[in-house]
Length: 94
Image 1 (cartoon, rainbow, N blue to C red):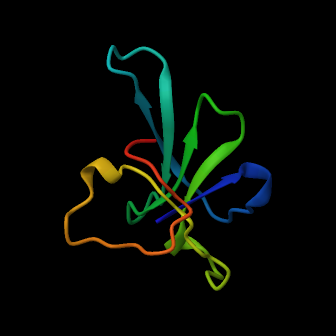
Image 2 (image 1 turned 180 degrees about the vertical axis):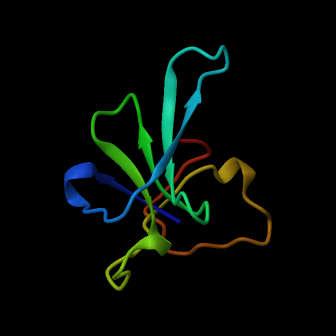
């Protein structure tokens, strides 16, 4: 699960490595995936075309008690056995 936030809402500690994902033609950077250089765990994805908007992996937060999912995306690929009641928004794609 990801939390979509502005980078100003997050404080990171520790070093992260970065992988830059490019478009289909290997042109512009689409997303910068930041991960732990020791274990490889994903921490955050920085969306290059949206100034300061990041996707934080919810499992990396020190306090997840306030996390309440309300949007689901990529529903076009959802398995038929998945049911997430109470979603305010459900999108086939991003």
